[in-house]
Image (cartoon, rainbow, N blue to C red):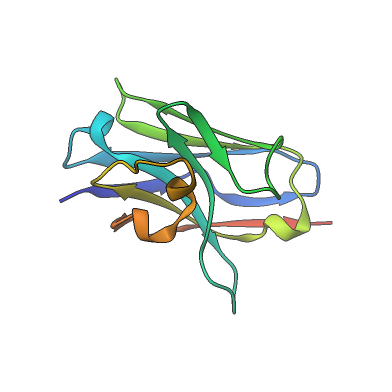
Length: 126
């Protein structure tokens, strides 16, 4: 069973930066499909970034501002959030999938991920 523990959230102002981290244990990290998913009240969870075999996959609203990366030696997934906007306020979840998707678009699907962290709050204010 995969365990995911997020850290690094907090309250910032518009334009600021944050880095989220996700410590992964329980499975061989390099074999997992990994992503970051966020959720705001009243909305469904949205996959904002994922690590594919060819690089990062991002939802349009964060492209160019967020960067996903992973350190296999440390079993850690990261999300660098730059130029934060009010709309980025959400609970961010680290997510892992036990089966790597066969298409890039599948990395954007919530159904790809079957393990979730507890979530961490990111609040952006003006």
